[in-house]
Image 1: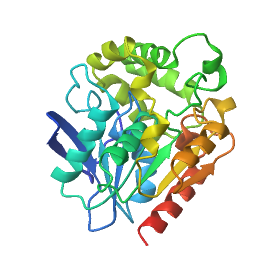
Image 2: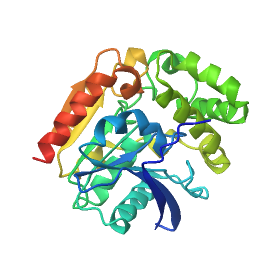
Image 3: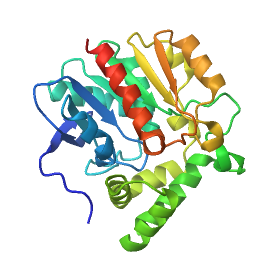
Image 4: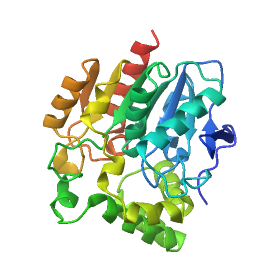
Length: 285
């Protein structure tokens, strides 16, 4: 069985024609909205949220086609995902929350801040899909393979989705050695829940579906935090890409966590928490 969190609120909100599911820690506290990566879901933030919930009202959305939310019905474009989150923020009555995410969720947050500049107080990005032009999406071993990294990932996720859970847990522990159970269990559960429509759509997708253009960053007017890892360890954002992001987005803080993979918070958790809490403390001052 996966992790159950009976003290957290959960519910649904109609946003952009999609029934979106969310979890929420609640309380009269500064608000933080978290957007997960592709094939994850809201509960994949569990380990981090336990560090944040005493000081923040944290809202964890299940993106369209993920978790308990409705399918995107073939539409997983960043503009649609950004509008989902924007309308969810309004329907939930949130007041200028900090909005951030990992990978696809960072992409969503970038587009939201570009399309709805007055909505967020600030944004943060955990290894967003912003490689330098001409680079493979991922660094490390995956980047050396002569194949679209996104499509490879979706094939692997489909395999984990269909295998018995006990085998999936063995695979997960091999893929993520040393990760705590409140990372492993939600990650594995999320692979059982994401929509087959997502698999079918992404299988035929151009990688630009989750690759924001630098021009979008130029539209962002709020403070932003980039947490980046190392390309050699499998991260997406390189030092050159981070420098180019900073030129497009002058009000950008960059924290580089040495040795971190694409899953930065899972491989350099303490450094990640410190960077994020410092940023949240600054923008909520």
